Every structure is written in structure tokens, then in C-alpha cells.
Image (tube, rainbow, N blue to C red; front, side):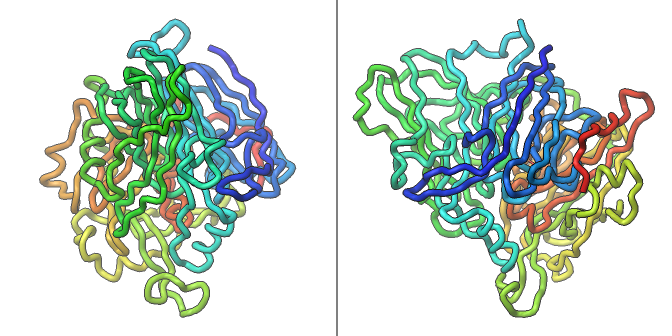
Length: 538
Ligand code: C2O
């Protein structure tokens, strides 16, 4: 195995998009940031220097970070921020993961432009579980605002109203030539007839679930979230923010130009949201470069049936070992809610309220004086409590009419303790305090099995019997169905403090988060590594 050394310089740069000049925060002057390429088993040493005027941290989304939450990156969870002028070196190893992950800033709104791909190939000498592709190409989907993103998020946080939607979806940082002033920069991929291409699709968007499709070409799904899947063929894939999907494509069409396109899936919206089709161009060599590319048929913005059919096809390649005897049977009612407030500029949500979000009715507040991990390992008092609450399934009609008591989340920094090695099941239940919506829930430090999902209220008596305990997929981010539930299982075998949150940035900022403390086990291999000497202090 190899060790890869990288320097990340976080700095403001000038970028022109949608006919306007912007200053954005980016890494090494590149937007999207550098693609890191490693093999399973390799180590990374990334020195991050902060030359931007904002606090920053970097999260390696989906990397398991075994016994090593010090390198995980969420601000005030596992580390204090890297201050302007400061630096921190992330050191970690990739263990038993292959496919595509990504990295992004985990400091407030910075992940809008601070992100890049992390490509993990098989160990030297091991093949892919599919024919070796001729071309590999990361497709990073993002969002672009005409206004400064900081003001977009501030508006949502300050006024308590919904955030302004983005002005464009992007593919590798570019909206594509259907948008004004965008044809020059449009992302292009050039192929020869007969080539097989591995597209490593990443949803790095701040707030949008996205459909992705390539005109006239079928996509064969081979991996999600850096775990191989049973292979299946589809015209369209859907990714929640945070998720990745690797697909194979064969250039078997008439030489020509074809759009790869991404557009929002908006389960909660009741108006079309079609101004967002981002495009990149797949062009066959020797084809006329003037011909207008063919657009793929993308599903309608609210096509939940296509989403359900797609996600039901994602399975492990064969039988897997799912935790069977459950030690911790948890039920998390999650979603948006409201805080009451007195009429005024800070109270511009519906009917004199502020939007909030919660898990089991706790709206998560990040600490400031120390990170949760430092507070835990150094016994610093009054940073957090470990009384993350229980709520029972079927206490309410969660997806119908939820009683007022659930409409009023309480603020808190509440964690939940897990014993090392315990078998955990969590049922994530969407709620409809505002309206139902699908939520991409991400757990740091783990991959989990998705053993079941469905619509309406989770009923343990009837739904448990239908769980897939044979070949469920493994992911780090589950897109909980709109007005429905999803059940996940994992073994708590990675000690540390691990954040769990909605990967829609606005929902995270509103408090849709919690964290687990996974206690040390007995042997050295079950115990936290010591903190690095250069860990930033608060
Ligand atoms: Cu990709 Cu906590 O995030």
C-alpha cells in the first residue's frame, strides 16, 4: 500500500458564472477541487492550509476513519475549526472501501464550493468486479447561486424563512450550455465508439436531490457510496446530497453528441422546478462538433415512483452478514418543524414562526468551546449531554397530522452512547410537521445496511417481517422516502464521536443532527487512537 501526500490551500478565487464575476472559496485555485486517486488500503496525508478569511475544516465523506475520528473533520464535532492562517494535517487510511467517495468543507456554508472527488481503486493486482473501463470520469453535481452563498444561508438562518433556491445545478462546476453565458465552460467528455466509461457520479449539491441521465445511453450501476452493488441497468439514477453512484456506460450509439444531464427531484415542492437542467456533453470523436446534442428524458421533478423503483433495485452483490440480534433498537422521528417567535424580522416563517429541524424533537446545537470529541476524550464538562431522547414508533400519525407537542422542537446538544460492538438498528421516520420531504441522512464513520424502507408510518409488527436480511445494500447516506421510513443496521465497531445528520445543508443548519459516542472496546484494536499533535484548538 502507498501513502499519498497532498497540500490543500483553501483560498478565495475569482470565478465567472452565469454572466457574473464571483469570489468563491476553493482549494488550490481549482473549482471543483483536486480529485484524489488512491487504492484500497492506501493512506492519505493531506495538509490543509487556510488562506481564506473564514474558519474551515475538511470532511472525507464516507471514509470510515477506523478508530480515527480525529481525521473526520466536522467542525465542533470532531475538531475545532482551522482558523484563517492556520493549518491541520489529516492522516488516514482507506480500509476495505472501493468506488467513489468525496471530500468537502464541513464548516457552515463553505461546502457549496469546497469539494472534490475521492477515487478508490482496487488494490494493486486486484481487478474491478466488471470489465476494466477504458475511461474513468468523475461527474460532480453541485449548485450555484448568483448571490453570495453566505447571504443565502444567513437569510434562512436570520429570518427563519426557507432559503432561496439556487440559480443553477452544475456538473463539475459548470451549469452547461442551456444556461446563459455558460457554453464555453460546459463540461465535455470525449469518447471513441465502443469505449466503456466508468462515470463516478457524486451529489455535492447543498440542498437538492438530483436525477442524472445520459441521452440514448443505458447506465449500469456497479457501486454506491464506495460499496459494490449487484449490477443493474437503468436510464436514470437519483442521488441525494452526499450520495455517490458509479455507473458503466458503453459508447455504442451513432457517433454524435449527447447530453449528460442533471435536474432536481423535489418531493416536497408543488410547483415544477424545471429551470435547473444542468448539462455536460458526451461527444464521440470525429463527430461534427456543431450538431446540437440530444437531451435525455429526465423524470418530472416530483416523480417519486421512479425514485422508489430505482432505490429498490440497489442491493449487495450477494448474501451479506447483517446484524441479527439487535442490542439497540432505535426509532428516530425526523424532519422539519417550527419555533414560535414574536413577529419581527427574525420570524418570517409561516404564521409567525421560524423554520427548524430536529431528530426526536431535539434541534441540534453545535458546541463552541470545545469539539464533542475533545469534550468526550478530555472529560470537559457542560459541552453536551448523553440523553438523546427515545420516542416510540406509532406514537403519532407521524406522516399525517402530528400533535402540537412535536411541532415545538427543543434546542440541545444531546448525544447517544453506544457500547463497542453492539448491534444497532435505527428506523428513520419522516414527519410532516411542515410537509413531508425525503431526507438524505448521513452517518459518519460507518457504512450501514439498508434493511427496509416504505411509505407512511413504520409499524414494527408488520414492517419488520419484510426486512431484507439477505442482500441489502450498504451505504453511508440513506435517502429516507418522502412521507415514509427507512431501517438501517450496523455494528458499532468504530469507537469515537460520530455525527449523524441530514445532508441537506439548510436542514443541518436548522438542527437536523445528533451524534453517537461509540465507547472503546477492550483490546488495543478496539480503542481510539491518540489525538494528533496539531489538532486545532477552540
Ligand atoms: Cu458529507 Cu457530515 O457530511
